[in-house]
Amino acid sequence: METISSVVKGLIERNPFLLEAMARGILSYGNLASELAPQVASRLEKPVKESAVVMALRRYGEEVARLAKLGTESGISCQIVMKTNICDFNVVKRSELLDRLQDLYSIVHLGRGDFLNISIGNDEISIVISDKYADQVAQFLAEETLLGHKTGLVSLTLLFEDGFIETPGMVYQAVRRLAWERINVYEIVSTMTELTVVVDCDDSLKGYEVLQAFISGRE
Image (cartoon, rainbow, N blue to C red; front, side):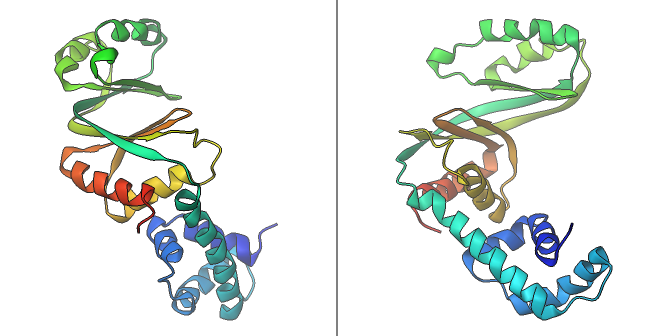
């Protein structure tokens, strides 16, 4: 059963910029309540007081603020590694292509710093690889249905000394800071000790600064 709190939370979570403002403590709950109250009332199909919406916003704001501190209070050591000259291919998923994907690993030299990540979704396959292999990949995918191709990308990898995967909010905190600076993330890749985001080359330096501020505990 939906409540005022659950509806308010759902509305806020749809807007990353409201979440960011809430996390930073710069959101006017009174003004936002005036805007949200009609939407909450419509969802619940009953009258809703703005004061009740304000209370729901304050409670959720406290939850978001606690989450915002997790990344900087976790005590996890981290450094950032940047790799340039990366491109991204997106194609329609086919069983025949799945059988051939392993062939891509034979053309890259991961030990020499090359980049390759393959993400398999329900209907699509994403291949992020070093630019110097773009022609080979294009030939490899010649008979596939290409959905998108992006060049001039850069990967920013957070290397954690300890596993971060069990610390709630780490991925969210990193990505929300990039979103606040209007930096688009094309790919997100994670392991037990690494978190990689792939961004446009034009955003790479700003993205590096944002993530550096994140791991050093600065807003």
